[in-house]
Length: 365
Image 1 (cartoon, one colour):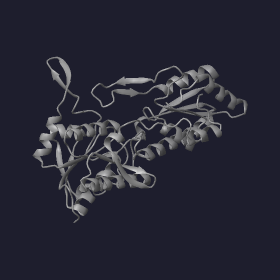
Image 2 (tube, rainbow, N blue to C red; image 1 turned 90 degrees about the vertical axis):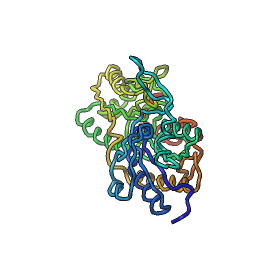
Image 3 (tube, one colour; image 1 turned 120 degrees about the vertical axis):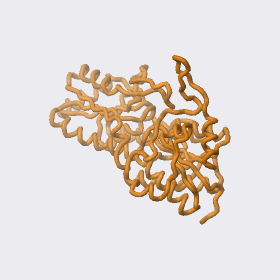
Image 4 (spheres, rainbow, N blue to C red; image 1 turned 30 degrees about the vertical axis):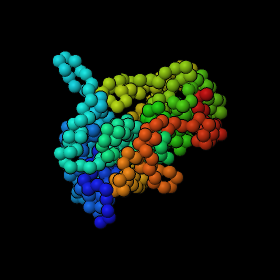
């Protein structure tokens, strides 16, 4: 066994689920036990498990066969922020700081450090807990690929593959019926899934949050294709896309969530406008949570495994308050504060956008 700065560690999965979470958990457990002789405890349902003392020991037997499974064996939620926790007082819901409970529960189990697997919301909470005295290491997870401190988050490649497969299927029905097909994909405030899947799937129009669109230009593209005897068109729309001077389409708000805004519906807006302007039958597919589900791709399995092992190594070395990240081909680490500093948006003058334009793809501007 190698020397280690800590002996008992906790792990949790927070925020939205993503393919590869189980691969991280598996790597954490196997590396911690085999390499360092650590004891690993898993908190169930994200930070809720830390608050409510929902914890169980994880052994190598618990992680047998979970590498290819989607989801997370620990459960997750994008609620239960311990610094903004909902409680009912009388007939009123109020939000209070219950973070002291976390320190009490960690102490009860003799846990010396915690691995937080999550996106910007979960890692921001992890940073607050670290600032308050909890030894924390972060692992970047989000299908949106919107964390700026890492070249790629696990979960993105699988979501991208799912979206690309959907475009492939829409091509056949669009061509058969001579229709315009609109695919709305996830991504929140970043257009990575839309742009990359649109390129991979051969979309004709790609609308992303970073480039506000003019619907008249989109309609012109559809009409131009008709004049070229191309009888169908594929439009990929990121859920956070918005028109020039317009706002993102909000489906609903969940006030006790890390990010209360739930985007959704822009695909229908675009489809109605395109059909009205072009006279062409336009159908909408909202891919939704299919992008979060299913078995992770080989790339995501490997990346998630490397992240899990890297996180345990950081704890063993006593390097707390940091997040593992991918830089080029190497797993490195950065301060948690840097990890959540800003969103990783699609560069509007970047190579992928340039490639899209050179292929004749309309970006709405």
